[in-house]
Image (cartoon, rainbow, N blue to C red; front, side, top):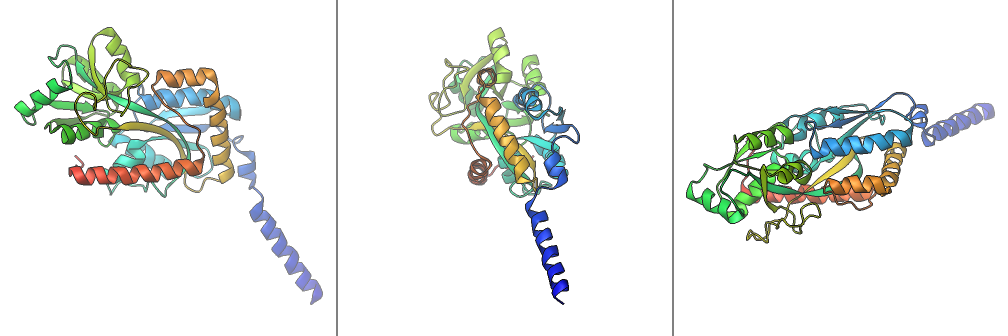
Length: 327
């Protein structure tokens, strides 16, 4: 009987130790295979450029290849859903945004994933202002010109965005509500096609990030009327804010972040967070992020999770107050 009890005690101890020690797969991560980083938008936008910038440095730090995969559609929903349903082993990551994890969950309650439960927040990578852009051939010289035109012909003036539920879309909806300007949304599958149609004159204006907008502003093909953040952006210091342009209370900033599927081992999440913090602290990386118009503050997975909860609550209220419906 004593031998049997001793055997059971040893077995229980071994089981406890097995739970405390990392699994072989976790311990070996990321040696087993390349890591896939999903960008839920088309190539060429801020999310895509940021993902490729960080992936190039992160694969050096992890000594493993990182493959960036663009999976655009439904304002980031398709790509996010693919990661939510991936194995929680650290080999599939998501470059998530305000669209995929705050706006769309509020705007479309029936999306196929739960933004709060199906992902492990890794790090908030940065926030960025959008810009109200018009084709240079348009007569609009400032925000008030747009408001006047919209009020003259309600619903006739259209604006493009990177997709339903993106920060660009909600920037336009916020403008409609706060300025009392009845404008009509035209969603695209990413920033690049929206800007292409703006350049071609198919749409008169759009809300877009400074990264995508800047080359066309410099070329004179597009005109920047205002930025959507409460303060001016360092990328476009001469462009006024919406508030400075007479639209009181306007403050919309997009954000970019890294996620893993829910259940990813904390050791992997913390390793990713630590390596990214080192990468972003490097002067050359900061310079590239500055060029994207991204503002960054150091944050832990727990701090980022708290931020996301606040953002989700904010957009639930905005969408409810504005009676904004999915298209």
